Length: 157
Image 1 (cartoon, one colour):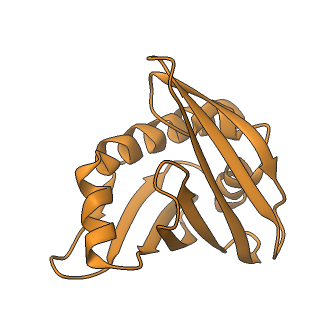
Image 2: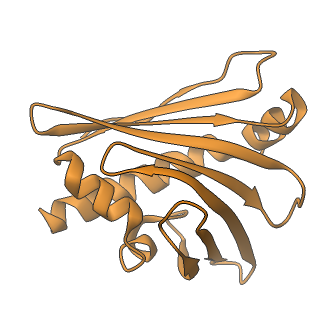
């Protein structure tokens, strides 16, 4: 449907990503919060994802493991801080390969004419942390993940 738009302002600790999906907000929220759906869209195209834990409630924890085609596993985890169904999720996000570098992410879903705009606003602990994430290929990985989500939503509709 749409293309991922990524905004990275030099000298700021944040990244904003926006993508429009040809699906109602309830469906996008369901795909975003259903542990059975996550392996179908979360992560890079050439990887698979296992949901180790996903307690979608305030104070609940989540942990996903992305299994790369090169045989290397990458763990990610966080805590849900606020969930307003089907409008917003606030959670922490930490890549286990660089422990201690935690970001706060707010995902907002807005429905317009049967389509949903998903905006994620990620705030890093420092500009250096944000810049390291950008250099790691975050934008390409996020674009692949959002493309996979769009594909899944087509099958769920």
